[in-house]
Length: 106
Image 1 (tube, rainbow, N blue to C red):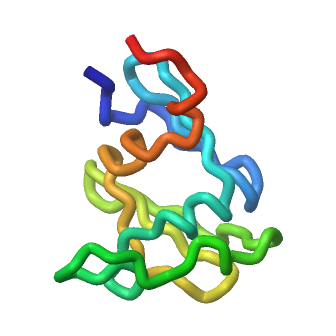
Image 2 (image 1 turned 135 degrees about the horizontal axis):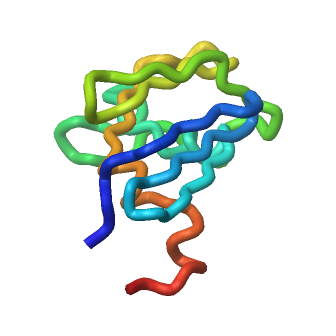
C-alpha cells in the first residue's frame, strides 16, 4: 500500500512542487497540474462530483505563490491566477500522482 505521509515537500521554484513520501516514492507536480486537479467546491461540484473548472483552461505560465500545510493531512496552494481555496489532502496527492501511470506498481 502506498504511503500517504510525506517526509519532505519542496517548492524549489514557482512552477513545481515535489513530494518525497516516507516510503521513498517521489511525486512531482507542475503548477498547471495542481491547479487542474484542485478539489475545492468552486472547481468540483460538491453534490455531483462533476469538475466545474476546465483543467485545459489553466495558463501554461501559472505559478504558485504560496504553499502551506493544513494540519498534518494536506496543503493549500495560492496560485498566481488568484485561486487559493483548494485543500489538497496528502492521500489525494498520492492517488493523483502524474507519474504513477508511467511507473510500475508494486
